[in-house]
Length: 397
Image (tube, rainbow, N blue to C red; front, side, top):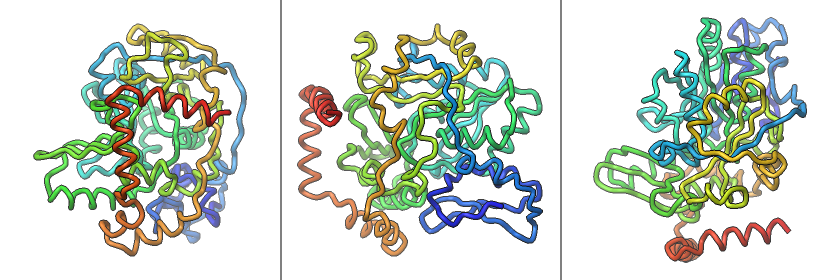
């Protein structure tokens, strides 16, 4: 029976709640905003299925042959809307062209990040763009299984733990399932996101939010992450060094406890495809380096290879050595660092008003203003990329 005594040992994938034959397990939000399984012991029959499908308790890594690519979507409008190179869309379209269904993370009407599904190419736009929030899965795994058992093709995309959780829940391979995991830095708290939205809505004086981009590349290019919030009257845009939400995320303050001891930080994933950013495409193919975003793809299965053959005409791509593609990719192999002030951060978020909280923990200080000025100046003068690349090279030594 699942019993969470150490929250670092639960990634919130919902496999245990989804597999329970008596519906004795429900996912409930804790004081940090993360979902955890709670067992009704009066309903539990001790069948052991929840333990069997738990990815934390049943972790292993089998090595296998992988194909590695750098890709850009040939459709520039799709690539522009995507965080990096637009690699996911052709995979999703492959499934939709076969009357299938595509699952992924999207904003709902209130900008909560939820897992949902679409059945048309026009709707794929809601999955494009990074969303630095742990998505609400709900009964997604059950819906995936229902559609698969009705002999329809499914593409499921999510973080590596969400994909592995799904595969464990299904307990068998489905020929009609294509899985895509997106390389994950960590999973930030939906509570922090909710507080941030309230904070921004107050600053925007109630103007209706029309669009949010966590990684807007339209103004300063691909390599300078910018949070953009568009309303009917104005646009908020701040870089990674200035926006409080991005600072909390990349500063590893707002992440799920399991992300500090992540069980799926490994090269060999259970998905058909693993996709993530490439900030140094010039190291592989200078023709892909235009600062509009480039994706890395690992093809992990024969099924994935078959799909890639079908979609490659929609991509500008270069095949590379697998070892070169994954070299020095910290987010693939290493958990984020647990910060000593994380506990205080979450204590205050439940006790303080939004404006007071963000001013205390992530103030727009003189230091932040100076860093913002330096970064934007470097971007505008064209030296930001060179400086960033040099800094990373020094850190690797």
